Length: 160
Image 1 (cartoon, rainbow, N blue to C red):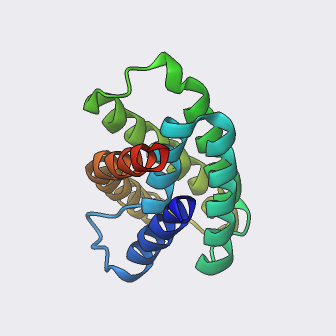
Image 2 (tube, rainbow, N blue to C red):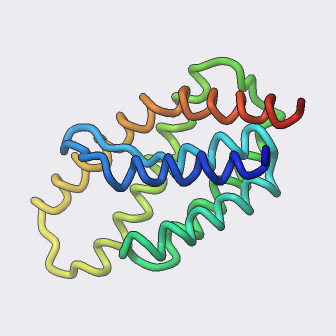
């Protein structure tokens, strides 16, 4: 039952992300933050596995470019889990910075995918995409601490 809790938390976060209206100035990716938090708690292998599974489900249900979320979430899970021992993970500034860097990196990667799929992109496209990327960075920076603390709480409960 305790291991099922992680899947339930994932489904709740995924459901919130898909159903809650996100204004243009404040967007978030709770699935990405969940992968980040689980990798910080459990390490690289678990982070990559959870990232791959979460990204695959997201790719199937979102209708976006198939495979992008699977690859990026797996990479985020692995890299975050790999470097988790070299950082002071209880300091909130690290989580804010990590959320900013990870979100900005993924948005830059997706920009090139979107640019490839939108050959008639102009300056307006770049401006709109930059606004969207900044909104995602802001939203993920706001929610990274609560998601991490939730995963940490469940991990402590799971170990008892």
